[in-house]
Structure formats: structure tokens, C-alpha cells
Length: 421
Image (cartoon, rainbow, N blue to C red; front, side, top):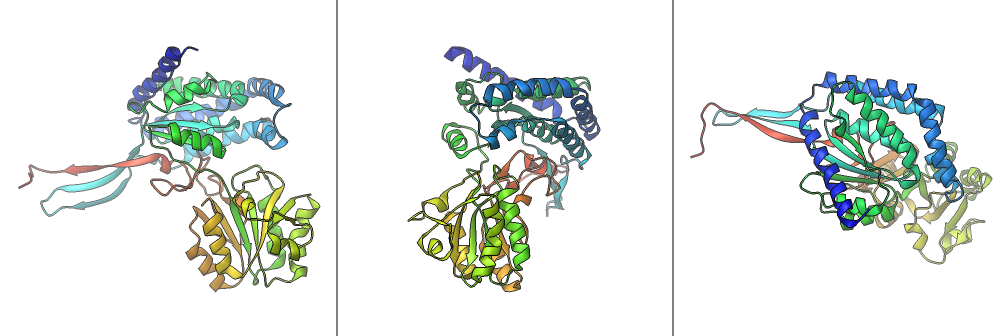
């Protein structure tokens, strides 16, 4: 595509989204829910077509993608059923729109209320996880937002068929199909052009690696909700139940290591016995997790690769690798997290209530857990249904973003002739 064609294509998508948003924000909850139920039925009925498209993506990328990324790209019977179930779950949620968040009467007699409304038009950028096409579309539609979807080029065939299914299903219910649009051109210049469509698009949500998100932040003239990476910590206190700690650490690192809520750094209280530390690390060793640490940690624990400095404590591995550090109690653990965390998810394993309280009060991340795995940081687990992402920002939305995070509010004032004097 030429430069002019790219600009026209991007502007057309954005304008269509703006027109559609004005229509769907006034749809009743029943209409939106019925349309989502039709999407779920269509997904189940189109399994063969979805798998055929997905097989093209897998074939085109199996030689270049890592095992973890290929797993993210792959759809199968169970994952298609999970997508359909996720859409039905979103449909079953209470309507996030037109909720009265607060109301009162002013001294002049005006009744004032704050009411939830859609954000408007969302530009949702994500990498090669085709199920996110459905998650993003369903969450935005439920919350009355139009969405422009842009998945990774590796999943283009899968995303096209999924977007087609979604659009056809809502159109069959009399809804403007342009409420959900997919960027079908893989040229990154289209993304750049869309990031300048501030007259039509209200919010950008990038979901992917740090490089993608930084590029979006630098290029966008539209507000961006982001999280750059998931440098998540698990701290094992001297008071921890060692069997529990072992289970949590193994799950947090190895259950699915390519996700943003995976443990990337394990912090161990220096007062833990060598025997306890070895019990905690045993499952990681059995699963061939490479472990890196500073000089003090490498001297105490065998098999820890001495990194010589603190550079790896800033690193998100997304692989069977993790950083390990010996710390002097919960205060030192919190100080390390304050310095190196990406503000995503942190967990403490401890039986001491004082240690738990100190950790909860001093860790400033979007999710903070006591005696639980960081892998639980997820919209589905939190009862939000699917998620459009996990925000580490503090303005507007924080943590897993479900339908309520895709809403804003407006003030409504009801008077009987009041004026300002």
C-alpha cells in the first residue's frame, strides 16, 4: 500500500468505528447479550473453519516461533470451546452501563448523579494470540464500545476468520457489524496511522511485549493504557509453610512460563534453612529451570549462575528461567520489589501476620497476593471474564481489565430552572 492508501485505510476504519459507537452505546443490555450469545453459537458451529485457518498460521510460523509462542498461536477444540464459553460468561455479567455510581441533591435543588457510560472507540493492539480477537471484541461490545482490533501478523488467518464470525453474528441481530473491525493489513505503517486518529478513537490498549508497548506509547497521539512487562516476584518468608511455598513457587514459574503473570524473580528470606531452600527449588531443578542470582545468592545456593551485577533483576524471561535473590526479611524483599518490579503482580508466602501486613502495605503493584501463586492474576480468575489486558497504570484502570474497566462516566444534572448567580 502507498502512504496515501495507508492513511485512507486507517481513517476509514476509525470513522466507521466512531459511527458504530454512536449506535451501540444506546443498545439495550438484552440486545447486546443476545448478540454475544449468537457469537458463542457461531464459534462452536465454525470449529472446522477456524482450525483450518489456524493451521495456515501454524504452518507459516512453526520454523520461526519458539515453543511458547507457538503454543499461544495454536487453537484446538478445547480452546475454541473455551472462547465460546468466555463469550457466554461475558454476556451473563450485569450490564456495566447506565449504573448510578453516586447521586445526591445540591443545595440549589438540582439532582446530580454520576452514571457509567462506554469509553467510545477502542483501538486494541495485541500479539499472536488469536483467542484475544474474541476476548477483546466481546468485552468491548458488552461495554458498548466500538473496537478496532489489530492482532499480530503471525495470527492473521485465525484473526480474520474469528472477526468475520463475530461480525456476522452481531449483524444477524441487527447490530452494526462495524462495532467490531479487524485491521487486515499487516503493514505496521497502518498501526502508526491509526495511532494518529485522535478525532475518532478514544483509547489505545496495547497487549504484548515491552517493545510493542513502548513503540505504541511513543507514536500515539491517543491516550494509552499499558503495561510494559510482567516482572513478578514471589517472596518466601522465614515463617512460610515450606510445602505450600514449594507448590506456589513451582506453579508461579512453570505452570505456563510464557505469560506476563509468571514469577520472574524468587526472593528467599536469608533465615530459611538450606534444607528448606533446597526443597523449594527442587521442582524448578527437576523441570530444568535456569536460575540466576547475585554473588551472595550464588555463593549460598548451588546451581545459581552468578550474574555479577543486578541486570537480570530487571529481566522478564518468559521462559524456564528465573532470577533468585537472598534477602534480609520482608522489608528487604519489599525494597527489592520497589526497585525492580514492573508493578504487575507480587506474592508473599508467610504464616506471620505481621510479615503479611507489611508486604500488603508496602508493595505497590496492581495485584498483591498472600499465600497464592502470581499465575492467579487474570481477568477470568478474578471473575471478570476475559480481559483486554492487565494495566500497570494508575490512571483509569489498574490490574486485569474487564468490562467495567472499559467504561467511564458522565455527570447528569436534573433541575427545574436553576441558574448560577
